[in-house]
Length: 242
Ligand SMILES: NC(=O)c1ccc[n+]([C@@H]2O[C@H](COP(=O)([O-])OP(=O)(O)OC[C@H]3O[C@@H](n4cnc5c(N)ncnc54)[C@H](OP(=O)(O)O)[C@@H]3O)[C@@H](O)[C@H]2O)c1
Image 1 (cartoon, rainbow, N blue to C red):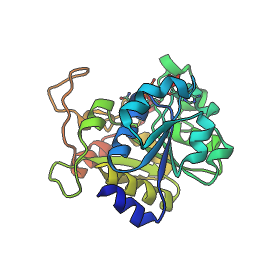
Image 2 (cartoon, rainbow, N blue to C red):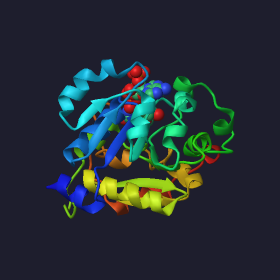
Image 3 (cartoon, rainbow, N blue to C red):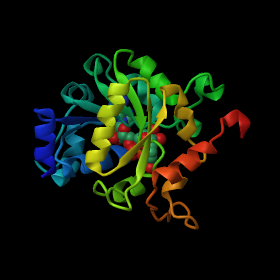
């Protein structure tokens, strides 16, 4: 069983700590539970508001305050509206691998000058907030319903590939193993400052995972090979060049 595999591989239980348990957080949690991980969910309103989700996910899931989810995490997933990134617990995530799913939507997040002038990227902002954590950008460029349905076992011809970026090779390896366990291959785009290549509105953003000819919100998922993803990444442009 997958869960035994995780235990044998790591020698210890692996816990995924969710900072944010909305669309993406709950979906990652469901995939992680299905792969045999324990998950600790959190949101901004408190653990009692997550009891239905915990019940749905079963005994491998519990809810806690964000700081407790961070404390419990072997791998943390930060998946909140970007405007709240400064509220992500710092101390409890020190030294840990942190997957950053966040995207910048000025209508939702307000304007952030360093993102508007492209002097930094969203995941570099989170890395600056968490200077002693190992931030890996991931899950940000796939629509939640596609993430929920495109997972496949290793070796499946229809397995999809997810993009990651980060500055720490060991952290990226850890994330790649996690993605493999939950049903995805990984394509490493490079350092964190390369994360713009799959940020909002680029050619590598969400459309690679959508069946051509279908449109939001009635998108069908398309299994996305590494070749499809690489092609999309190859056409990505900075906002200033669009
Ligand atoms: N939806 C997608 O298809 C998709 C795909 C890829 C990436 N993303 C990106 O991933 C991020 C999350 O998206 P989403 O669609 O999952 O958002 P969402 O459904 O609105 O969920 C956001 C979650 O973050 C929690 N949260 C907000 N502030 C928090 C804080 N300070 N501490 C802990 N939790 C906090 C919210 O809790 P409360 O409800 O209690 O406030 C909620 O559980 C966004 O940056 C988004 O752009 C979204």
